[in-house]
Image 1: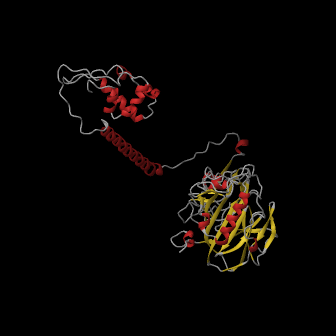
Image 2: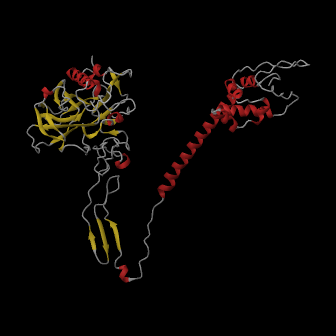
Length: 497
């Protein structure tokens, strides 16, 4: 360090000139530098770990004695920031500045950090390899042996002892054979229980994420309603891998849904549908009327550009059914992970996909929603199951009261002739206007097939769990197929030329 240097220039030499204000604010004098500690630096407000390490290294250099006849660094000026260098009686040879104007020791530290990282990675690989070898070579050869306790010398107690054994069964396959009976034998009795039901090892009837957390990944109603068997309470599948009432995050099967918030534009600017003070559930409010106007305009053409003017959630959900028991309206933004960006009112979800009828026949959709549910097949609106105060295209319905759906009625749409294996484009629009609660039930009826009056099968695109909660009764389900086209996504079939 030059004899005429002050704290400011000393900090510049270390590449830490931006800390000069901190040193000046805390009245740090040159004679205080060798005594600075980490605690002092934290108290001064130097929060960067890198800055503290570099300061400690530089201060350590100040404490080192002169080596090889070099002149010992002189103390800095009393205040360290505005000192004037005193003339030296003997000229001091000038020393050229280093070629690298950056921070001293930066390359050495970077190399040390890189070497430490590589060393850690190598050790981790060795540890994992050793663990794998132990499990495969040592543990695989170990056999568990169970030894029963010696029989009791008391004959009366020994008579109560029994042995439990699983009846053996030959197995020609690779998997171990399942026990079919439990036999209990003893001195006093011999009991053989009935055959146990077989447990499938594979199944296609599980939705992704449903098995995770063993019940914590199930559906939740969001209103504190559950069946006590692992459905979760308002959890919307929080314990699983993305399963929600509105679909699976990251899924690609079935109907693919996009959530839109009509209260803000795609640039996150407020629209004329924002919340009104004291709005409540006033269906006649101006903003609610405006929401129904936009939704009605959309279902006339189903042009994505209409909803594309509004904010949309970045992620999509894939669902194989639209059977949503009554829950809070904020569960939809939560399912799409935009609850902080979207208030629980005047949102809409547009689902699209390709379905395939399981057999030849006439079918019609039956449904109800609070507030919006409209279904379109091959470009034709065939059902408007919206709440009576939110109907968008009621003329497509053939019957407005075919069964109960909580505090409203199920409505039935148009009959459609379907052929087995024929792909059909399907779109569905669901939405919530005033906020509060939301529900949506989409069922289907097959002409000529009997079912209890007012109770219909649930429309599904894959066999799976039907959520329970505050919902109408249902009569099983009719499972349609779903098909990916044009590159593996059902949405590609909806792209405009």
